[in-house]
Structure formats: C-alpha cells, structure tokens
Length: 214
Ligand code: AMP
Image (cartoon, rainbow, N blue to C red; front, top):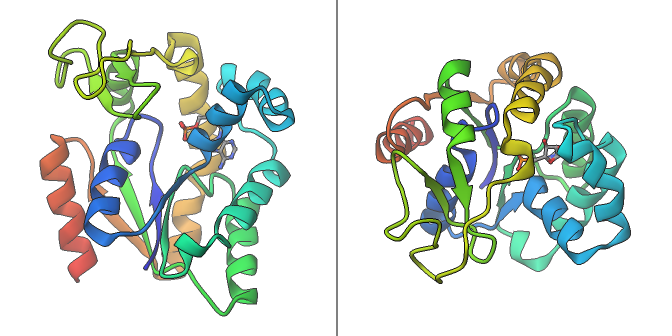
C-alpha cells in the first residue's frame, strides 16, 4: 500500500504515521525527518535546507523530489510506503505521480488530517520531540513522566526551531498557500480520504482505519 499522509503542520502526521507503520509494516518516509538528519550530520543537503526550514519556508521542490525518488527505490519500499510531509506542492505531487508511473505504481490513498489553525498553533508551540527515538510529546496533553526527558531513552527533549511562534505562523501561511491546493488535486483523482484530526490520537487513528476500510 502506498499512502500519502497529508495535513497542516501540527495535524498529527508524525503521531499517526508511527501507528500506521506498526500496523501495515510499511516504512514511514518523512522528508522533514530526512532533512533534519541531514542538518545534524552537517551534509551539503543539510546546509542547503537549514535556512529555509528555520524560517518555516519550503525547501526547493527539486531537492525534496530527489530525496523521495531515491528513498522510494530502497528494498524496504517494495511492498509500499507512507509519505509524511511529501508532497507539499503541486509540482511535487506531479513528480511523484510521474516517478511511480514509470515503475507501474500509483498512490493508493491520501489521508488528509483536518484540524483548525487555532488548535494547530497550540499543539505546535507546546510540542517537544525526542532527538534520539523521535517520540513526540505535548507538554499539556501527553507530557513526559520526567520534565524534559524522553520516557523511552532518557534523552533531553528538543523544541524544534521551527516550532517557535514566528515560524509556526509562516508554516501555516505556506500550508494554506502552497500545500492546501493538493486537496483538490487528489480529490479529482478520487484518492482523498478526509479524517477529523482534532481529537485525541487514538480517536484520530480510528478515523483513519475507518476510511481505509471503505
Ligand atoms: P515537517 O517535519 O514535515 O513539518 O517539515 C519541516 C520542514 O522541512 C518544513 O517546514 C520545510 O521547511 C521542510 N520540508 C519538509 N518536507 C518538505 C517538502 N515536501 N517540501 C518542501 N519542504 C519540505
């Protein structure tokens, strides 16, 4: 199964992706995670991406398309994959369709997590992530047992540089401007599955299971 997980920043893509991966045994491919790893490693890709990311802007299409082209050809993607945070523009969606068509493949479902902006800002500004295992916390709704410390591995939690107020506003603006038009793109192709993303993670996952079973 080839899935696209679509939604604004803070909609819960990463949280739901972890559940989908566990149930469907397909790899999660997050362009954001790949870019953050590149920044941490100090690679040329990371250097190129960092300025855009810190400001909440999109990294250029050719960069992320190249990442996806390469990653989806790895052996673990043979039976499918879940894209988290890609595509984010119409040219990215077109490039994805073209690269899959060349391999006689296609996207099966686009899960769209629907959440209001006010809820997103609250979620993002209070979000913390473990830089080691990727577990996502929220200081009010799912806090770690010990302050600022990952329950799983004891690492100090990070507040992403683009989860600060100014970058959050810019990311939402970019989403409405450049990414939201993808909904119509996938709707026209009969692939869009809208899910209410405003509830607790378990309730949202139930919604995902329901639309995938239809
Ligand atoms: P995310 O972790 O998905 O919220 O992505 C964090 C940041 O990485 C975004 O704000 C962009 O700067 C960059 N990024 C991730 N995926 C993409 C993409 N598909 N296209 C352009 N930029 C991206």
